[in-house]
Length: 244
Ligand code: 6PG
Image (cartoon, rainbow, N blue to C red; front, side):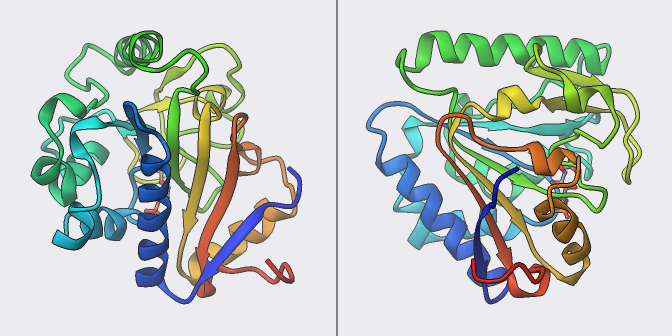
Protein backbone atom coordinates (compact mmCIF):
# COMPACT_ATOMS: atom_id res chain seq x y z
CA UNK A 1 0.00 0.00 0.00
CA UNK A 2 1.17 3.56 -0.64
CA UNK A 3 1.14 6.15 2.09
CA UNK A 4 -2.47 6.16 3.27
CA UNK A 5 -4.53 9.31 3.50
CA UNK A 6 -5.08 9.57 7.25
CA UNK A 7 -7.41 11.91 9.11
CA UNK A 8 -6.90 12.03 12.87
CA UNK A 9 -9.73 13.24 15.11
CA UNK A 10 -9.55 14.03 18.83
CA UNK A 11 -11.83 11.26 20.06
CA UNK A 12 -14.62 8.86 19.13
CA UNK A 13 -17.29 11.58 19.14
CA UNK A 14 -15.32 13.74 16.72
CA UNK A 15 -14.60 10.68 14.59
CA UNK A 16 -18.32 9.90 14.30
CA UNK A 17 -19.06 13.52 13.37
CA UNK A 18 -16.40 13.54 10.63
CA UNK A 19 -17.66 10.21 9.25
CA UNK A 20 -21.21 11.57 9.16
CA UNK A 21 -20.00 14.65 7.25
CA UNK A 22 -18.23 12.48 4.68
CA UNK A 23 -21.28 10.27 4.27
CA UNK A 24 -23.54 13.28 3.66
CA UNK A 25 -21.02 14.70 1.17
CA UNK A 26 -20.89 11.46 -0.84
CA UNK A 27 -24.67 11.25 -0.97
CA UNK A 28 -25.03 14.89 -1.91
CA UNK A 29 -22.67 14.63 -4.89
CA UNK A 30 -24.81 11.84 -6.43
CA UNK A 31 -28.28 12.91 -7.59
CA UNK A 32 -29.40 9.37 -8.36
CA UNK A 33 -29.69 6.21 -6.27
CA UNK A 34 -26.86 6.01 -3.75
CA UNK A 35 -25.35 2.83 -2.36
CA UNK A 36 -23.60 2.67 0.99
CA UNK A 37 -21.89 -0.41 2.35
CA UNK A 38 -21.99 -0.49 6.15
CA UNK A 39 -19.67 -2.32 8.52
CA UNK A 40 -20.25 -4.20 11.73
CA UNK A 41 -18.19 -4.15 14.90
CA UNK A 42 -18.40 -1.56 17.63
CA UNK A 43 -16.53 1.35 15.99
CA UNK A 44 -19.30 2.57 13.63
CA UNK A 45 -22.11 2.35 16.19
CA UNK A 46 -21.65 5.93 17.30
CA UNK A 47 -21.83 7.12 13.67
CA UNK A 48 -25.02 5.14 13.12
CA UNK A 49 -26.63 6.60 16.23
CA UNK A 50 -25.61 10.08 15.12
CA UNK A 51 -27.32 9.59 11.75
CA UNK A 52 -30.60 8.92 13.59
CA UNK A 53 -30.51 12.21 15.48
CA UNK A 54 -32.89 14.89 14.14
CA UNK A 55 -30.06 17.11 12.89
CA UNK A 56 -28.36 14.45 10.75
CA UNK A 57 -31.50 12.59 9.84
CA UNK A 58 -32.85 15.75 8.17
CA UNK A 59 -29.73 16.05 6.03
CA UNK A 60 -30.12 12.73 4.23
CA UNK A 61 -32.49 11.91 1.32
CA UNK A 62 -33.39 8.51 2.78
CA UNK A 63 -35.61 7.38 -0.09
CA UNK A 64 -32.70 7.35 -2.54
CA UNK A 65 -30.01 5.73 -0.38
CA UNK A 66 -29.60 1.94 -0.44
CA UNK A 67 -27.83 0.29 2.46
CA UNK A 68 -25.73 -2.87 2.18
CA UNK A 69 -23.44 -4.57 4.69
CA UNK A 70 -19.81 -5.57 4.12
CA UNK A 71 -19.97 -8.68 6.26
CA UNK A 72 -22.18 -10.39 8.74
CA UNK A 73 -22.11 -13.14 11.27
CA UNK A 74 -24.19 -16.16 10.20
CA UNK A 75 -26.85 -15.60 12.86
CA UNK A 76 -30.48 -14.41 12.73
CA UNK A 77 -30.95 -10.64 12.41
CA UNK A 78 -32.38 -10.43 15.92
CA UNK A 79 -29.28 -12.05 17.44
CA UNK A 80 -27.15 -9.50 19.37
CA UNK A 81 -24.17 -10.62 17.24
CA UNK A 82 -25.83 -9.60 13.96
CA UNK A 83 -24.13 -6.67 12.23
CA UNK A 84 -27.21 -5.62 10.28
CA UNK A 85 -29.26 -6.09 13.46
CA UNK A 86 -27.00 -3.56 15.21
CA UNK A 87 -27.33 -1.09 12.31
CA UNK A 88 -31.10 -1.57 12.21
CA UNK A 89 -31.41 -0.78 15.91
CA UNK A 90 -29.00 2.14 15.77
CA UNK A 91 -30.60 3.91 12.79
CA UNK A 92 -31.86 1.95 9.81
CA UNK A 93 -35.22 0.83 11.12
CA UNK A 94 -36.03 4.33 12.35
CA UNK A 95 -34.84 6.22 9.27
CA UNK A 96 -34.60 4.10 6.11
CA UNK A 97 -37.54 2.79 4.05
CA UNK A 98 -37.52 -1.04 4.42
CA UNK A 99 -36.96 -1.62 0.70
CA UNK A 100 -33.67 0.31 0.85
CA UNK A 101 -32.13 -2.07 3.42
CA UNK A 102 -30.27 -5.05 1.91
CA UNK A 103 -29.16 -7.51 4.60
CA UNK A 104 -27.09 -10.62 3.93
CA UNK A 105 -29.71 -13.42 4.07
CA UNK A 106 -28.62 -15.44 7.09
CA UNK A 107 -31.78 -17.57 7.19
CA UNK A 108 -30.30 -19.69 4.37
CA UNK A 109 -28.92 -23.24 4.57
CA UNK A 110 -25.27 -22.20 4.83
CA UNK A 111 -22.89 -19.21 4.68
CA UNK A 112 -21.98 -20.25 1.11
CA UNK A 113 -25.61 -20.15 0.06
CA UNK A 114 -26.04 -16.72 1.71
CA UNK A 115 -22.91 -15.50 -0.11
CA UNK A 116 -24.23 -16.71 -3.49
CA UNK A 117 -27.57 -14.96 -2.96
CA UNK A 118 -26.01 -11.71 -1.75
CA UNK A 119 -23.61 -11.63 -4.69
CA UNK A 120 -26.63 -11.97 -7.00
CA UNK A 121 -28.32 -9.07 -5.15
CA UNK A 122 -25.25 -6.87 -5.58
CA UNK A 123 -24.76 -7.73 -9.25
CA UNK A 124 -28.44 -7.09 -9.94
CA UNK A 125 -28.27 -3.74 -8.12
CA UNK A 126 -25.24 -2.69 -10.11
CA UNK A 127 -26.78 -3.75 -13.42
CA UNK A 128 -30.19 -2.18 -12.88
CA UNK A 129 -29.95 0.58 -10.28
CA UNK A 130 -26.56 2.17 -10.96
CA UNK A 131 -25.65 4.20 -14.01
CA UNK A 132 -23.19 2.40 -16.29
CA UNK A 133 -20.19 4.54 -15.28
CA UNK A 134 -20.83 4.42 -11.51
CA UNK A 135 -18.95 2.02 -9.23
CA UNK A 136 -21.03 -0.38 -7.15
CA UNK A 137 -20.91 1.78 -4.00
CA UNK A 138 -20.67 5.50 -3.31
CA UNK A 139 -19.18 4.78 0.10
CA UNK A 140 -17.77 1.69 1.82
CA UNK A 141 -17.31 1.87 5.58
CA UNK A 142 -14.89 -0.54 7.24
CA UNK A 143 -13.45 -1.21 10.69
CA UNK A 144 -10.21 -3.05 11.36
CA UNK A 145 -9.72 -6.00 13.69
CA UNK A 146 -6.78 -6.65 16.03
CA UNK A 147 -5.34 -9.19 13.55
CA UNK A 148 -5.60 -6.77 10.60
CA UNK A 149 -8.85 -8.14 9.19
CA UNK A 150 -11.46 -6.00 7.51
CA UNK A 151 -15.03 -7.20 6.94
CA UNK A 152 -14.59 -10.96 7.62
CA UNK A 153 -11.43 -11.24 5.53
CA UNK A 154 -8.92 -12.65 7.99
CA UNK A 155 -5.15 -12.80 7.36
CA UNK A 156 -4.10 -16.05 5.69
CA UNK A 157 -7.65 -17.08 4.81
CA UNK A 158 -8.50 -17.88 1.16
CA UNK A 159 -11.34 -15.32 1.36
CA UNK A 160 -8.74 -12.57 1.83
CA UNK A 161 -7.12 -13.27 -1.54
CA UNK A 162 -10.27 -14.07 -3.53
CA UNK A 163 -10.10 -12.36 -6.91
CA UNK A 164 -13.32 -13.39 -8.71
CA UNK A 165 -16.19 -13.74 -6.31
CA UNK A 166 -17.82 -10.71 -4.71
CA UNK A 167 -19.15 -12.48 -1.61
CA UNK A 168 -17.86 -15.58 0.16
CA UNK A 169 -18.79 -17.78 3.09
CA UNK A 170 -16.19 -17.90 5.88
CA UNK A 171 -16.74 -21.10 7.88
CA UNK A 172 -14.59 -20.14 10.88
CA UNK A 173 -13.68 -16.70 12.24
CA UNK A 174 -10.14 -15.86 13.33
CA UNK A 175 -11.26 -13.68 16.24
CA UNK A 176 -14.32 -13.54 18.50
CA UNK A 177 -17.17 -13.97 18.00
CA UNK A 178 -16.29 -17.41 16.63
CA UNK A 179 -19.32 -17.86 14.44
CA UNK A 180 -19.28 -18.48 10.68
CA UNK A 181 -19.35 -15.30 8.60
CA UNK A 182 -20.35 -14.07 5.17
CA UNK A 183 -18.13 -11.40 3.68
CA UNK A 184 -17.72 -9.17 0.68
CA UNK A 185 -14.29 -9.66 -0.89
CA UNK A 186 -11.57 -7.10 -1.60
CA UNK A 187 -12.42 -6.78 -5.33
CA UNK A 188 -16.05 -6.09 -4.43
CA UNK A 189 -15.32 -3.59 -1.64
CA UNK A 190 -12.86 -1.79 -3.92
CA UNK A 191 -15.66 -0.73 -6.28
CA UNK A 192 -16.47 2.52 -4.53
CA UNK A 193 -16.05 6.26 -4.82
CA UNK A 194 -14.76 6.30 -1.25
CA UNK A 195 -13.50 3.67 1.15
CA UNK A 196 -13.55 4.98 4.72
CA UNK A 197 -11.67 2.84 7.22
CA UNK A 198 -12.35 3.74 10.84
CA UNK A 199 -10.44 2.85 14.00
CA UNK A 200 -10.51 4.25 17.50
CA UNK A 201 -8.92 3.56 20.86
CA UNK A 202 -5.39 2.73 22.04
CA UNK A 203 -5.99 -0.99 21.48
CA UNK A 204 -5.94 -0.32 17.71
CA UNK A 205 -2.59 1.47 17.67
CA UNK A 206 -0.44 -1.68 17.33
CA UNK A 207 -2.34 -3.06 14.36
CA UNK A 208 -2.49 0.33 12.63
CA UNK A 209 1.29 0.61 12.96
CA UNK A 210 1.63 -2.74 11.15
CA UNK A 211 -0.97 -1.84 8.50
CA UNK A 212 0.60 1.54 7.74
CA UNK A 213 4.00 -0.15 7.51
CA UNK A 214 2.54 -2.15 4.64
CA UNK A 215 2.50 -5.60 6.23
CA UNK A 216 0.73 -8.27 4.21
CA UNK A 217 -2.64 -7.89 5.96
CA UNK A 218 -6.14 -7.56 4.51
CA UNK A 219 -6.46 -4.04 5.95
CA UNK A 220 -3.30 -3.00 4.10
CA UNK A 221 -4.73 -4.30 0.82
CA UNK A 222 -8.09 -2.59 1.22
CA UNK A 223 -8.40 0.34 -1.14
CA UNK A 224 -10.84 1.95 -3.51
CA UNK A 225 -10.11 1.22 -7.15
CA UNK A 226 -12.48 3.97 -8.27
CA UNK A 227 -11.88 6.82 -5.84
CA UNK A 228 -10.48 7.76 -2.44
CA UNK A 229 -9.18 5.55 0.36
CA UNK A 230 -9.24 7.30 3.71
CA UNK A 231 -8.33 6.20 7.20
CA UNK A 232 -10.32 8.04 9.85
CA UNK A 233 -8.86 7.37 13.27
CA UNK A 234 -8.78 8.99 16.66
CA UNK A 235 -5.70 10.23 18.52
CA UNK A 236 -5.60 7.22 20.82
CA UNK A 237 -5.36 4.86 17.85
CA UNK A 238 -2.87 6.94 15.87
CA UNK A 239 0.55 5.38 15.38
CA UNK A 240 3.53 7.68 15.04
CA UNK A 241 3.48 8.11 11.26
CA UNK A 242 4.40 11.77 11.09
CA UNK A 243 2.15 14.46 9.66
CA UNK A 244 -1.08 13.09 8.23
C1 6PG B 1 -17.32 -7.89 12.17
C2 6PG B 1 -16.79 -6.72 11.43
C3 6PG B 1 -15.30 -6.54 11.54
C4 6PG B 1 -15.08 -5.29 12.39
C5 6PG B 1 -13.70 -5.24 12.98
C6 6PG B 1 -13.53 -4.08 13.91
O1 6PG B 1 -18.32 -8.45 11.77
O2 6PG B 1 -16.76 -8.21 13.22
O3 6PG B 1 -17.39 -6.23 10.37
O4 6PG B 1 -14.58 -6.46 10.36
O5 6PG B 1 -15.34 -4.15 11.64
O6 6PG B 1 -13.47 -6.44 13.66
O7 6PG B 1 -14.42 -4.25 14.97
P1 6PG B 1 -14.58 -3.17 16.13
O8 6PG B 1 -15.14 -1.96 15.51
O9 6PG B 1 -15.57 -3.81 17.08
O10 6PG B 1 -13.24 -2.98 16.72
